[in-house]
Image 1: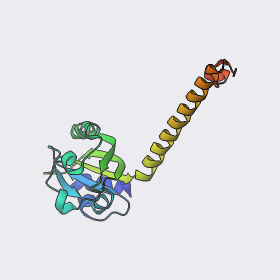
Image 2: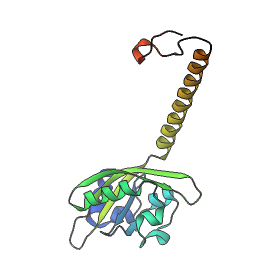
Image 3: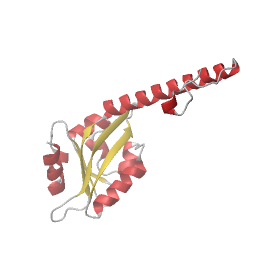
Image 4: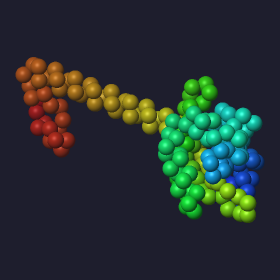
Length: 168
């Protein structure tokens, strides 16, 4: 469905304007102004087509990675395609993330790029939680090592394979 939606979006924006279940789709002109906004994009980013079409993408969506999206859009405009995560803060303050491809629109009179992707918000949130948990564990190990050094030990809990001595 994603491949077909991208092809439709390239040819005329149909995927961005008609429901393609599970596919987040939108189209932009060469200046980055939204020209089409699909129903899955409305659902994911919590912004209606009526409120967003005709506005510049990064300003309309509160993109948290505007530079990456702009770079991908420029690559796509020059005849290629570019994989990109579109990360935005919804009006309620929660995060939304779609992973997809920006591709130059094809066809007579068609300028700009089309995006077709999928909602990866849940995966993104799990990854962020895992990174936070890992950081917390690393901080605990560091505090434990400091306590061991203060008590006269070597102060390392890391094994030899991790660059430590293996000594406590």
